[in-house]
Image 1: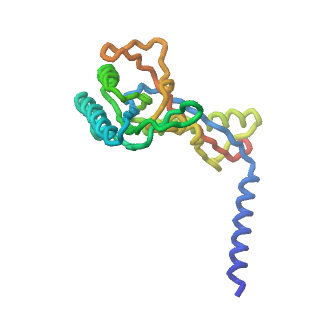
Image 2: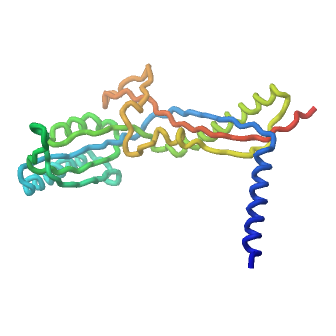
Image 3: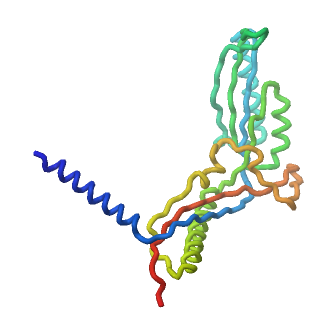
Length: 242
């Protein structure tokens, strides 16, 4: 009746022992980091549409017109509909803090609109057009690269090469050599850091290069964005061959 628990305990003990032996092997652990600078080819916009009115019905009617105006502008500027999304459509009571208390002052409606722009020549007319629509505010504009996955793979490979090179140089001083890798981990806090909020990255994530010339069609100085990768690798330590 007690054979199964005993076998489970025995297997668990053997597994723990094997892991402990692996940890006790002579080894060296190093970090490898790589950064690739790429020119952005995609702009991510986050726009908020918000209006208020004394009556809820009035808010709804106005809001529908403002949202329609925004979508009409985006269509006119040929923003890809597949890269356009509306979200967080909401109604609520609008309140103002007056004389040490919150007072109801009608109702509000809000819709968030996000989209991606790949034709940077539309930057200026888009910005100007949105500014002309009452109730619209540009919450955020960020930059990305459509080949981010490929660039990240390259950065990861370079980070692994950097880790191997670092380990080799370090153990050489000690008269040893590195063997096979025992552990490989990617530090996602670094690799995913730039993209932490995919739909929104602050403007300062665009690193403008000193000699970048503004584009004639957009008055933008395109710089570069960093794509990082950081890995931790443990190599077995072996005696140097004589």
